[in-house]
Length: 475
Picture 1 (spheres, rainbow, N blue to C red):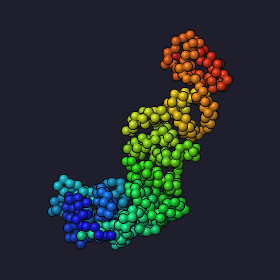
Picture 2 (tube, rainbow, N blue to C red; picture 1 turned 180 degrees about the vertical axis):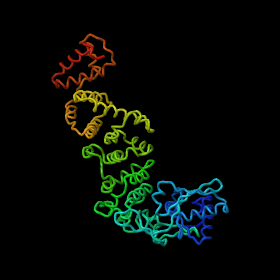
Picture 3 (tube, rainbow, N blue to C red; picture 1 turned 30 degrees about the vertical axis):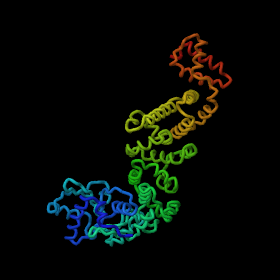
Picture 4 (cartoon, helix red, strand yellow; picture 1 turned 90 degrees about the vertical axis):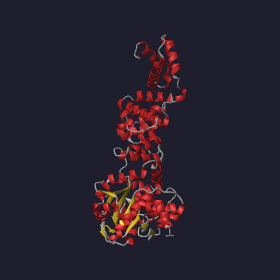
């Protein structure tokens, strides 16, 4: 299981990457250092070899045996002229600042105009004090380092001395079985670093045909019962959580994320500890997936990247915006122009903006009802849209709109006269050839008066419309 042909590994890594890695290996041997490849690159090589499924090789992670990442990067810099490459050591990224205590370093090595990005870190084992996410670092063996990692499939090493596979956690077996598994008891793995919850979900999204093993599945199903995980998760900043979510929902993967949260509601509850108010009003009229999406938008509206918002709003803009009051507050033309949205989505959002403006600026519920009924009658909005907007605006304004809802429900759309029939009747009664552009206004007034005088007062309603025309109230 641990045997993969050395030449095949080199082919997958790429010619120029191997030339650079060979130079790095020679420098390491000069200083009695052992270096290994680890992480996503090794995982992807193993998946390609075992399942013949090509996986992209991007940035490469290296672990050193004796030196810190910083010390080894300085050593590479020292030998750059002798070995004919250029090296740029990067120290100012947010990730590196947060990982400074781990001795992590990132560098870019250029050889014949080809660039290779390396993250360099020393082999280590970790222990944690209660309530702290910052690990206590100790010297370790490769075995120790493998078992402190999040998943077995991420714990496989390639020793650059001979390009041999080192697999202490049976990660190759789990790749063969398409299984996502922690090297240790998942309760300990997730207690040590609860952000691994999101990283495990990310792995499920990346490897869509891989399944969580039974141990992780059981912990995810009942995660709120593990105080050690819950308490440590609460100590993580919302920004760190948001960054992890951004990593796993980029491109077209947001719906995969939502489906996983639907499968594990306690994980959802742990991640979203403060959902927006009046959420219970929405759960009966919006499907679970859309509601979770709306909650994510509501909580992270300012920091979600445009590309992510494009994917979200183009999926189901109406329901998501209705269920996210912060969207209702912000939607306007400048909001729409920020994102690359389809014309259909733009039309929906403008419609929502109109509805929200109507509901929040007009105080007379009967007039609002008249407008909404007219829009339904002309198929400009659906009955479902009315439900969503009523609940959402009610939540936003923190007041009941049940009266408005009841008014709309008393009118049977199919029995109402069409605008053109009203137009013809009004022209006949008033003996005026009214421009057809006034038809919609006439209809709204008709419905308004009809609501005021109830269903029995149709003739009185029509008479009032005609009087309005006669007295030039419609212009």
